[in-house]
Length: 256
Image 1 (cartoon, rainbow, N blue to C red):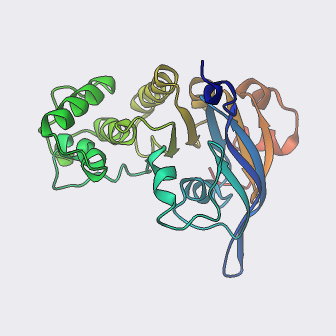
Image 2: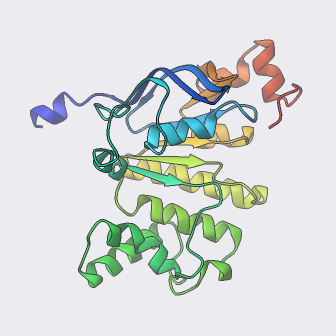
Image 3: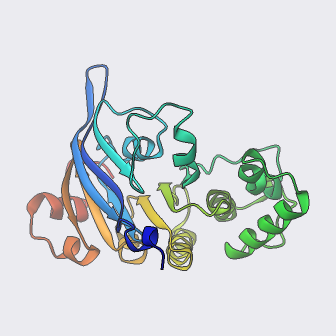
């Protein structure tokens, strides 16, 4: 094993006192957390807690007001748009709605990141698309348009697009939004299987308490712009903290 591999930081994402303010609204008020390389982390919390904003900050899509975000050993908060390119290539992002291009086939949608990255050989692109579609159990659907797919199949296609470049980490923003419980459960199992088989660090924003033992090694509960709780799914479910219990049981004033 080389020296670089031997000294590789076991923490893939390290956030310190992260703050984000838009106008008078303080969305993140000092978030600090560490996400281990190759682990699965679920982020939960009520509406307005800053979960989706946190993902956008880690992806480098919006600037932080202050604080530190280190991803794979690189501080990203001071990077220019041009310098952000290598960072974003390490990360995949699955939006809440999947964000597939309506006019492109599944094959074209999934292969789009490769074309954007400069892949010129169409046969290599096609082979990589076929391999990735097989991994998400969508073989045989590559010539369909997104409108011809079920909700669950669209999520699988979006996942394929997020992982086709072999990213080190994937961020998921409500990946099962709008799906029925059975299909949602299959998507969470697919996310977990993908994370483990490929050694990906996955960060999943979710409101589905039942999914936590499936998808996560660690759960982070965000409340009012800070981390209120961090621990395993078992720790969360066993917590006697009244604020945690109210949220988990759906008894608080926070909407989920």
